[in-house]
Image 1: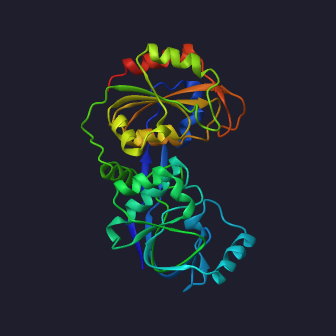
Image 2: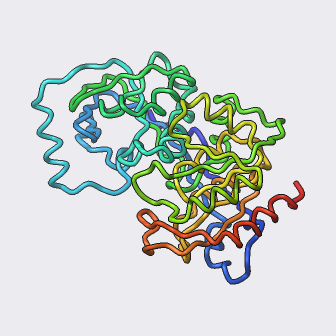
Image 3: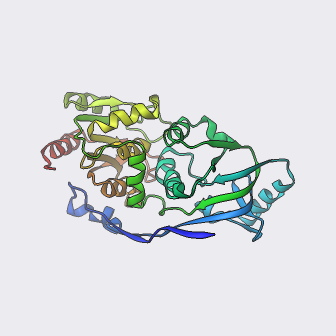
Length: 329
C-alpha cells in the first residue's frame, strides 16, 4: 500500500532582519522552496540488513529511504550477505532514519518528522533503530515524550509489516505543517512570550568552536545573556529553558536546532562562517517557524563550515544584539 500523507507544498521564507545588500547571495536561493509530497508505504516481508532495507517481494533495496546518497553496489552486496546471518523477527515496525539521523539536528528535523507523518497509521508498530542509538540520550528522551516504543537491532531483522515514510523534505528544508505538529506534540505553547536571553556554547564540542569565546562571554553576560551548554541537560530541561527564551545566539551547529522549542516570533542570531551560501538550514528553520532571523558573518579557519573554527567581531556582535533589542515584533 502506498499513500500520500502530505501534499506537495511551497515554503516561502522572509529575508534576515539585518540583511546587508552585499550578502543577498547568501540567502536569495533559499527564499522559495518546493517541498515534495510525503509518501507512506506499507510493506510486507522486509529485511533490515545492516543499515539497509531489502524488500523481498520486489527483490529491491530501498536505499533512497535509508541513505542521503546512494550506496555503492559493493556496499549493497555486503549488506545482502547478512541475510544468511541469524537475526530476529518483528511483526510491525516503523523506519524513520537515514545515515545522518544520529546527529541532533538531523534527528529532530529529518527523522522525527517522518515519524510524525506516520503516526495516524501506527498501530502497535515499534520504532526500529540500530543498537548504537541506545547511547543517544536525545533519541531516548524524545521518543519517550512522544510515547513510542523502541526496538534496537544489531545487524539483521525480518519485519512482517513495515511502515516506511519518505523523507518529508530535503535535509535543511522542512514541511511546515509537520514542524508545527512536532512542536505541539512536544508541548510547545504558541501564546507564550519569552523573556530569557540565551547564548549556546560549543566549547564542549569536538569541532567548530569560537576562538575568542572567553571575550565573547564577557560581553554577552554584560548584556544580560545566560550561557548554556545544552548537552549537559536532558531534553525536558532544554525544552523548559527554550520555552522561556526570547533570543537565542549561537554558532552554526546543533544547539540552534533548539529554536524548535521557542515561542513563535522569537529572535535567532546565527554566527556564520564567512561567504558560506550553502549551509542555510538554520536560516530556513527560523523562517519556517516564524522566528526573527539575524546573522553575523565571521572569519573562519577554513572555508569548510563543518570543520571551521571562527573569530567573532565583538563590535559587530554588540551592534547586532542592539538591532535585536530594538526590533519590533
